[in-house]
Figure (spheres, rainbow, N blue to C red):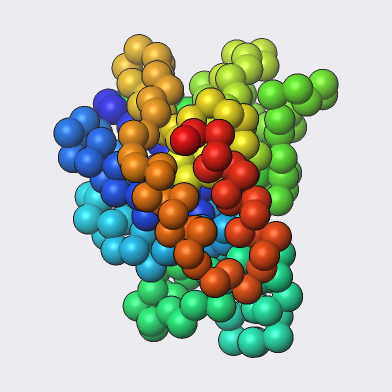
Length: 232
Ligand SMILES: [Fe+2]
């Protein structure tokens, strides 16, 4: 079975469109999104629209999705978050879009072709906010010996073997922080082999869009331009 896994899209509609094209051509049996539609880039609504076009999509909630859902009825709280993470926290979402964000699940455990798999945004002991980096010295707390544990949140690609479990982070599709590109992975549960794949899109166009956007947070805007600058 082919499973496409991605995370941390963060309102980057260019990356999401590229991912949708990949999903259409690769025809995976399942698509698992490891969370974070909200925060940083400015088009989470377009991202949601594209996600609706992907069949067999499972949406696991990210820390930013959680922060948004906890604050969306309180303008003051939203402004505090927007000062840190940009204007997407201040957008007006429709009832359907809020319902979609609310429909995300905290984590996923499943058995595919005899493989025990676990998925969450953070880490198993801190599902939204946990961060497990490639240079983390300690082992990862895992609930049981899964064949593979998939994490996101750091925006760093990671692959590590712990006992008989693989620990894998696909990196970020929308805002990579490790300089390795906008990525997703494709897993074959039969052979338990996977590949990292990069998304190809017009970074110049996105850079221009960010430049022209009036972000509630100048810091966020500067941060995005700096990150995108690595790919110009
Ligand atoms: Fe994130």
